[in-house]
Amino acid sequence: MHEDTYDVAALRAHFPQLADGTAYFDGPGGTQTPDVVADAVRDALLAPLSNRGALTQAARNADALTVAAREAMGDLLGVGPDQVAFGRSATELTFQLARTLSQSWAPGDEVVVTRLDHDANIRPWVLAAEAVGAVVRWVPFDPATGELDPADVAAALGPRTRLVAVTGASNLIGTMPDLPAVAAAAHTAGALVHVDAVHLAAHSPVDLAATGADSLVCSPYKFLGPHCGVLTATPDLLESLRPDKLLPSSDAVPERFELGTLPYELLAGTTAAVDLLASLAPAGPGGADRRERLRTAMHLVEQHEDRLRARIEQGLLDLGLTVRSRAARRTPTLLATSDQRPAADLAVALADAGVNAPAGHFYALEASRWLGLGDDGGLRVGVAPYTDDGDVDRLLDALADALR
Image 1 (tube, rainbow, N blue to C red):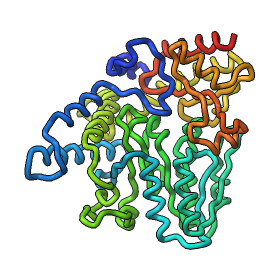
Image 2: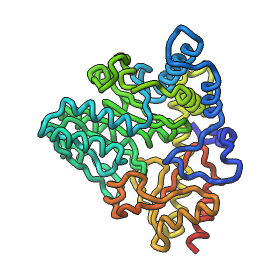
Image 3: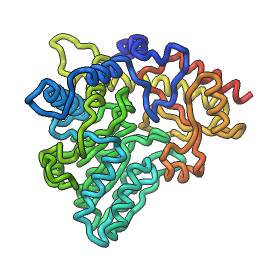
Image 4: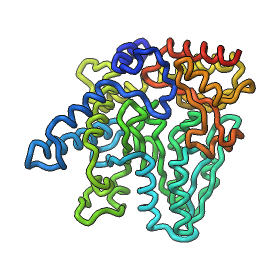
């Protein structure tokens, strides 16, 4: 694959938000929405729609939207459609999973979390552990390199470890831990592995089996879709769990994990987002299926974004900023600080120049503190699939002006 097969201009044409010249480097907090996703949401709402069923056209529409979204996310995550559950957010789904799993924990059992994670993959497990008297083990990362060493995870494991919660990629500094190594150590100890793939799925191909994880969450709005969350897990784990639910609601998998009526219009938007990502890969002779095209497309996205990340990183260093994102494998998300101006001031100056790059800890509070940045964090610059070289030029020029 070569980057010249990645047509960023064609992708950008789907985003009317880009027309005014604003450069969006705030994708780690949520990407801009393409027209095809908005159209899918609108079309779903304006067509006959009711609760899922087979009797009326409205019921059949709702069912078809649900089935299509499960298939789309299954293709993106390398799982079957019956392994895909939807919720309001990845945070809500993680809380629900933590409450359900902790029903089988006992005082003295152990849960492992990392300092690298977003709080959405820390607090649900900490609170669930506290509620049953389980012990929380914390795994550090190297603040100098940004690396999470699987050996440090292994050192935190014991005979009573029930679960390891680990990020697929840090939303603050981009570090992509060695998930298979972490999972192998956890499984040897008899523990489950839960992966927060919210930031990872936006930038790299994801396959549940390849990660070694037992369960995983992500958020479509991080990869061009609407605001909702997705949970997937191995079939055996899904079948074994009994979450709290309403008595009349379905006990089938994955419906038993979905509380109340699904947002069918958001499911339509999710399918459209996945289809748009798949379209970034050339169809080729024989017409590869969507799952294969998604794998190719996400590799192309990764290649495109990594080239821009390298440009940005060098530009930040040339301007005298300290870049905190240093791991060998990482997403195109850079956290930077300056001795000249606070990160929050730089974010304001950039916004005034039409460049969106916010400052803060972005809910990765433990990571920000571990880096020595306290609760202030730093300036986060994130590349998205629609970012181009012109955006990078605007960013670096605006930063240079702000630091004069």
